[in-house]
Length: 170
Image 1: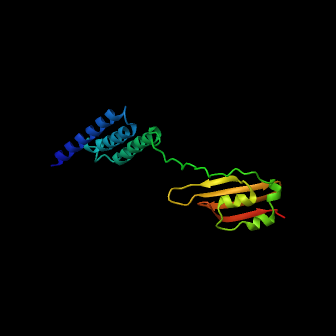
Image 2: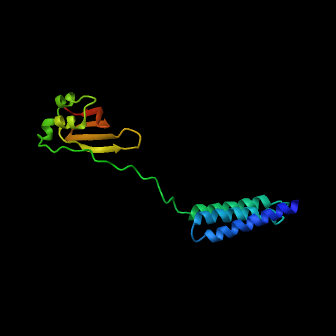
Image 3: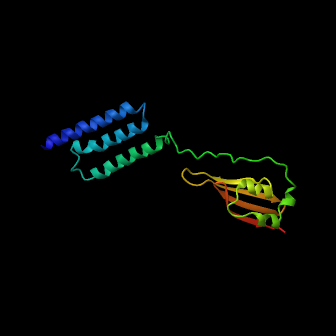
């Protein structure tokens, strides 16, 4: 019965080594994994099981094969694609000078829940400084209005104002 086990290990080892050689030209990762399995199975069936440094030798061979696998297998062919930014519709209107619009009075007219379009009626067109779009979550966009030392930041989720901040408004 013991010889049947050794024969099975021999057949499996040779099979995996041959598969590794066959796949080497077409699929490097599959080839390296098959070679790794074949080489790790090889020492037990070659009757080195009782040889004291056998475990160390086997782990060195497995580590070297894994190192080659990591070094030579290219990154995934289908990397996760970042979400594509969808442009926010922008209304083109003539606007007063930014200095006239960036006032504390105008800032105080902006309320939570307003749309970006409603805010640009008060402040004029803002500059998009941040956008986060993750499937299944609300789109978050931050805009900035700035003139000299005056500035206003506004954050929108799904085109609704959720926060605002100002600096140096009179």
